[in-house]
Image (cartoon, rainbow, N blue to C red):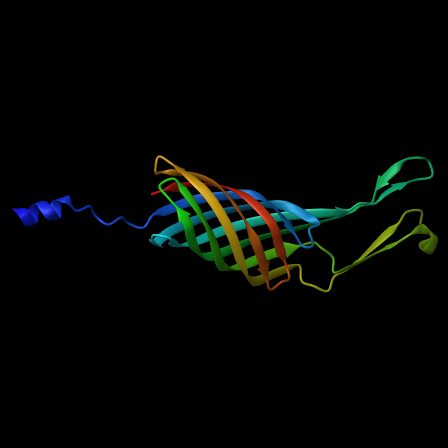
Length: 199
């Protein structure tokens, strides 16, 4: 009878928590001249009280322009700006350390690797020739491309996160970090809103 009461009073060991979350925010790319959106869907599972692994499918799109507004002889204006866009999709795997964790508060960092597919319209080399050199009434832009438009690369990601859990189910927080890859691309700084559901 004593043995039965002892086993009945013991609480079961907690299972590792799982969470499905959406990350949406902004970041800078390249040398900081391209701004854009980042979006990701992430699955996270804890395997120790303060350790987790996660996998995220993400998408990014950034754009920029080199402004060139020309005033013509009749007083009108023409926009001859050079505009460019970079977009990509990636799959990442991350290991997380939740160094400050309670029933509601969860603060930590994540470090991992990724595989990224990207398409870019950024020219490898660009020159602007003005009317004095060409005899044409408007500036002419010459683009030269040495790099492929589409690339596949591997890289690394470092993230800091903080979130608050409501009713042990819904989570709301913020995420920031740095991402680099073998294509020479860097995304920093990034700032995202994190909305998740634990189960």
